[in-house]
Image (cartoon, rainbow, N blue to C red; front, side):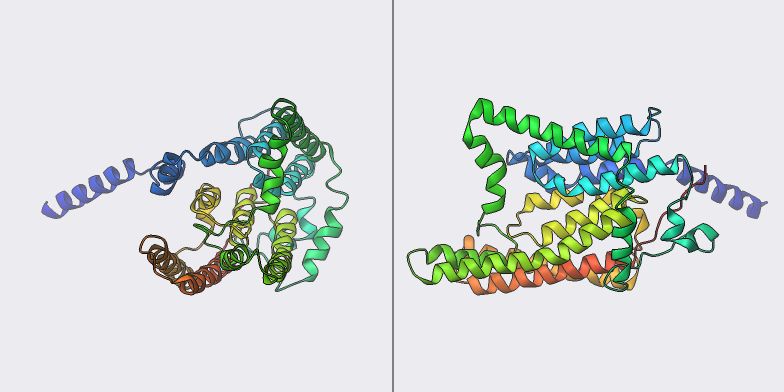
Length: 364
């Protein structure tokens, strides 16, 4: 009798624990709502949450909606308008354009012939041999990048992807024109051109900050020009891996897992930027919950990568505190901390992609 009563109590406990389980959607919302970083950034008067609302909760929600029963090209038009508004509010979402185009193109084709395109790139996926095939990234199999480019040249010329491109760029262009019309040339300079020439060394996590600081302090000397030139050359060199991963993720990942592609694009874009402030972290923080369930966080590699990333951030914050708050001359130490932070970001992204599992797809 006692044994049966004990078993009944254990069963009740299990039922109670199951009844209070929080859904993944609620966890995603709590990750953003209760995260101290977005709360703190918003208190400074930053509009990053509004941009995230447009680029994530707006465009992504419309693009991936399962309850939106309109034709795909209509969905692409609505998402394009929101995307154009997001680009006007903050220029960085423009890097997502190719990913959205390939996603809509794939959805349009998939609605006609399920898996019709996928067999050319991931044949093992169709056989059902493995539900968690990992992506061979271009540095482990370079020819795949060229295969994807060749494969997608014609695919993007479909109704839904072109409607998204025209509506997004049209909305962005119209809003920019209206801003210039009402506010003059300053709207173009401060809202658009400023992003291409911004050089700010304060509160900057990027290792570029030290070169920017030295160049600005030597503007009156001959050496300033050479420093600025080296800064520009290094910036162009770092565009190469960013462009490679942007193209690969847009063509090889976004059609099948849009949110993961957007996350790695944003993370790399921030890590390689010449200016990195705390508000930039919000751009990929909002995307992480949407793809976190496909990453093996408990692996040894991920644990080590997270530990290194946290250590680099704390190191940078500690040295920056001594520089800005205590007035100590530790500029070189802060620069070394910035290099460590950059290396930790690259390592973190590498391990995320290595521990990523492709989601299952349902055959209609």
